Image (cartoon, helix red, strand yellow):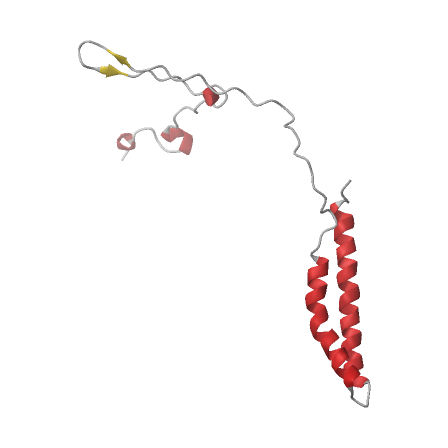
Length: 129
């Protein structure tokens, strides 16, 4: 079972914080430890490389297990029947029949707005002068 996203993020944040803390320690030791020698270069290498490694390690998620595809929760609706072919009459006129859309009943078109709905007079020419 995969880990919760919050737990995964917390774990990755801890790893990043620990590696960046180690980087700060390497930087401080590089500057303060005298006499300078080969270990100074080792501390410098740690101070330079650890940020890259911290980001790479922090971006690795714990939930890398393969998952199976889940079936849909409800079956898909069947597609609409094909539209009827246009009818051709003997007079050379092609007549098309349109079927209403399925969602027209669920979303009826609102009635047209009048000028009175906007607070305007019905006919602009009928105003008293």
